[in-house]
Length: 113
Image (cartoon, rainbow, N blue to C red; front, top):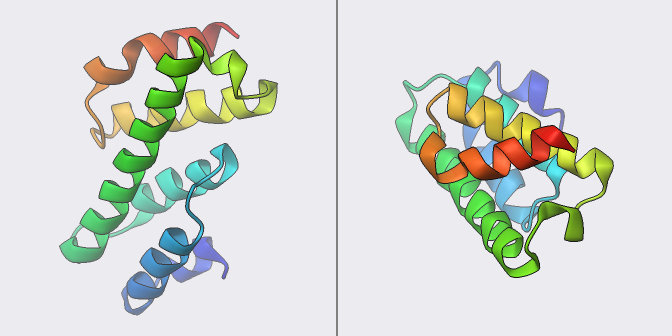
C-alpha cells in the first residue's frame, strides 16, 4: 500500500490503520511513515486518526521502555535508526501528538548522536 497516496482519500483510512497494526512492532523507518501519515490525515475522521495516534504512542512507549532497559538508544538503534527516531519524536512533539516532557531527554540524546 502506498500510504502517501492512500491518505489523500478518507475512504482509505480504515485500510491504513489495519496496515500499520499488522506491521507491529514498528521499526524506526515505519514510525517515520506513521508520524507523517498522522500529520497528513484529516482529524475529521477522528476514529481512525485516534487509532493511529494511539498506535504511535504505544510504539513510542515500547521504545522508551527499551531505552530505559538498555540505558541508551545506542544499545538498540543504529545511526540511521537514531536519526529516524529523533525525527519521529521531534515531529510528534511539535504537532502535539505526544507530551514533549515525557520524551525531551530521549530527543536530546538522539539529536546529539
